[in-house]
Image 1: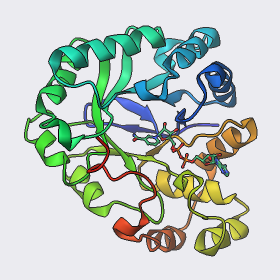
Image 2 (image 1 turned 90 degrees about the horizontal axis):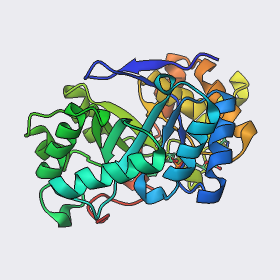
Image 3 (image 1 turned 120 degrees about the horizontal axis):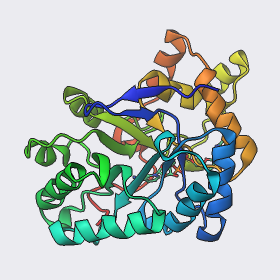
Length: 275
Ligand code: NAD
């Protein structure tokens, strides 16, 4: 199974299909991430707030996979801001992960109630220059929050946002595209909160022999988005990885594009409220 990669605006390469560990219990993380590695994943998306960075670190160490074959992302939580605290937070994450650098470090949420993110963002730029993270980006910075980041002149490589067929975030995606910022779609399958098994997606799945989840993931990949669906189950890990070989027609892609409900399609927190 060849996992497609995409080149970021900083020249680095990222596997377009990875494995997310939101809500993976800390004491199960090592086993589940080792399963994901065995299934063929090399890109892991974690965060300080998931409280499972140690488990990810143990899995990395136990796997024996060379460091340069892995792509590891973690994120700065909302209660850590400013130069000194941001620097300390990445240090703590690296310690838990057992790594000297991550591949991608993200500000997890814009948290407008914390005031301007500029000092924190410029600190990420410094941490990248020092080699503690290879790439930097933001998460949940939609078209309301991305402009302040862009005003610093330090352009994120990635914006990680909620995105699935009924919530396609067109304003944020189009602003990101103007700066060649790659979109990572979190909740790529709708977090189990939307029924994507029937309708247009179910029809495409039935006709092509792919599962509904593979159809949705193939739709993301065709648009150049990066995804890391989460499942604790080995067979679903494999099913999701195999989406890389599912090809959709232009008509099928257009039919899924037409499922967008705009803001009404959101199933998780609005960044304005996540402080
Ligand atoms: P998801 O869309 O990946 O959905 C996960 C749900 O889908 C689980 O209930 C799982 O059992 C089910 N599922 C997975 N594969 C399936 C399959 N093949 N068939 C049927 N059901 C399947 O949602 P998510 O886990 O929230 O998002 C993926 C990753 O995105 C997370 O693990 C995390 O790394 C990241 N994330 C980031 C943020 C953020 O604020 N930056 C927020 C949420 C998630």
